[in-house]
Structures are given as structure tokens and as C-alpha cells.
Amino acid sequence: MRIGELARRAEVSRDTIRFYERHGLIRSDIDPEASNSYRIYPEDTLLTLDVIRDAQAAGLSIADITLFIGQYMAQDSEAEDMQRFLDDKIAEVAARLAASQRFLTLLEQTKQALARAPQDGLDEMERGAGNENRTRN
Image 1 (cartoon, rainbow, N blue to C red):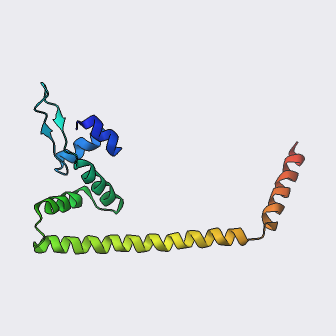
Image 2 (image 1 turned 60 degrees about the vertical axis):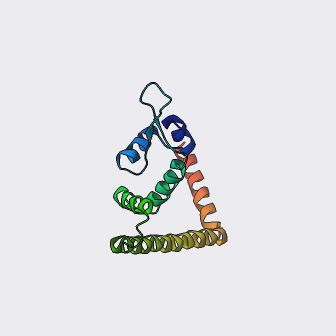
């Protein structure tokens, strides 16, 4: 598929695709059927773009993602450096998930507390604001 179709289907910009390609995260070939130098991308590029998006959302840098995808594609799972890298990233993502879960719990508790809170204070403030407006006029 060409870059326009890939961008549309992956819901990213063409510049984003070019950026990832420059960093070696995705690859393209020259379309042999085109008379110009249009690039074509394999279908599995969509999956790679999903992995990149998820990795970025989890807090990985482009350098980390480049290393991960390079190692993943090479299937060099025995490399000690890669094992250490993966252990570190798993710990980082797990810590982010735990922090997000704690904050989600706080948000839910706050919402429940507000739902149970008496409205008297809010009603009083609204009445006071209404009296101020009448006094000014």
C-alpha cells in the first residue's frame, strides 16, 4: 500500500510514517509497477504502527522502541542486553500502570464523595451570587 492509504488506515500523518521510517521502525520498497519512485508498505506495517503507538503511550522513547523493534525483528531473545532492557521496560510500564490505577481509584472515590455531598453549600453560594448581581444593578 502507498503512504496515503497507510496514513489513512493507521490514522497517522504521512510525516509520522516518514519519521518512523527514517528511524528504522518501519520499512518500504519502491513500487515496481509505478513509473516513478512511489514507496509501498507491506500490510504488516499497520500492526507495527499499532505497536509503536502502544509503546509510546506506555512511555517508551523512540530510541527504546527502535531497539525493541530491531531486536524483535531479529528474534535475538538470548541477548543479555535485550533481556535487561525488557526487564527494565516491564518494570517501568508496570509502575506506570500501578500509578494510573491508584489515580483512577482516587478519581472514582472523589466522584462518589461528590455525589453524596450535601448540596446546601452550593445552593447557598448560588443564592449569594444572585443577590450580588441584583445589588449591582
